[in-house]
Amino acid sequence: MKMLILGLLAGAGAFGQKIEIEFDQSVDFSKFTNFAIRGARLNSKSPSLNSELVKKRINADIEKFLEAKGLAFVEEGPSSLNVRYTLGTVRETKAEAYPAGWRGYGTAIVRVPYTEGTLVLDLRDPATKSLVWRAIARVEKSDAQSVEKKLDDMVKKSLEKYPPKPVSK
Image (cartoon, rainbow, N blue to C red; front, side, top):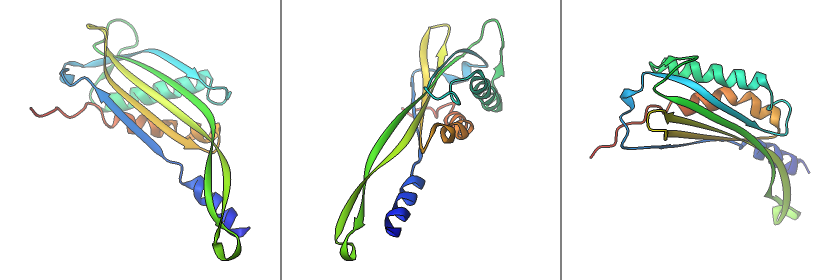
């Protein structure tokens, strides 16, 4: 029984964060000098993630990390880059196998519940009305409150990869 509990705790600690980046390779990202946050959607059944406070926190993180990259924040009026984002969560379970039985010759299958939080950051060129850069950050945690604690890190790790490295021809 102790092995099963230790296995469950080790499995819960294994939940990680994944960042995927996509971008338009034909775009010159040096032309973007300022940005505005033009849209935000929160799609979570959890009240802790579906609030104005979470939206303000994500907005502040986006401003902080893009300003650190040299872009100026524009609250109103035209901008050279528009930011839109979506935060969603889904409750899932995964089956994990652990050694069990006499001398560990058997296997116990345990269903472990978790919450997957996904933050999609889209950077759009308002001149062409096209998507030029996208980051998808996913984190698996035991519950929605744990996902909320990782929001700052999700924004930071996503925007660390902006602007993308030029593709050599």
